[in-house]
Image (cartoon, rainbow, N blue to C red):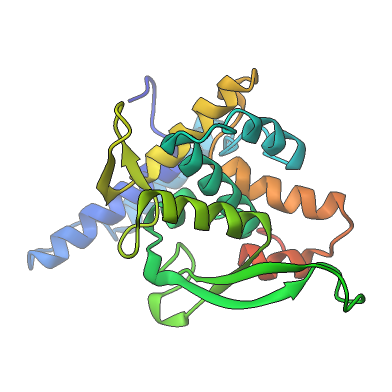
Length: 243
């Protein structure tokens, strides 16, 4: 898909895949040979290729607000994209693969919460938890969950009601006539949705990607003086260095 040499991470990932496939076939290969590991290490050192950012810019609250303005109509695609973007950001900046894999069965309705915990007379906000299942850094049996409160919950419920989705994939494809597919979105579709909306909002789509929602969540948390450990409870990063 791109010209020039592959990134070192791509080379390592493909070698790992081929090694696993070779073992499944009951064969032996040279994938663990010291010479191969040394060659890769030397090639990386010689290439001088810096590791690129997954998203050059973070999708912070102001950027997200501008993007949501172009999803304000009641067309099915706008209702879906509004719910998708709000959920992806507010649930800790979920990875595109995690958003695409979500199912209705992963949603758990919770009791409403106060908008101001210190004021018992403040308005009640809808709340639900999302079971993440298997993620990039967690196995399916770890039962990791994140919380959604307020506007993202409302947008998600509007989408489910409008699309008449009661089970199966949470976010689905929509054709040009507004017909909603039974299959869920692919992870790459989440990225394309964000880029399309970024462009419609008058911003540069090459400066943002779906991972910008993840970095944007942590950036926004820092801007609002929320401690990193608290933000990590929602983003589910495994280490503070990574976060």
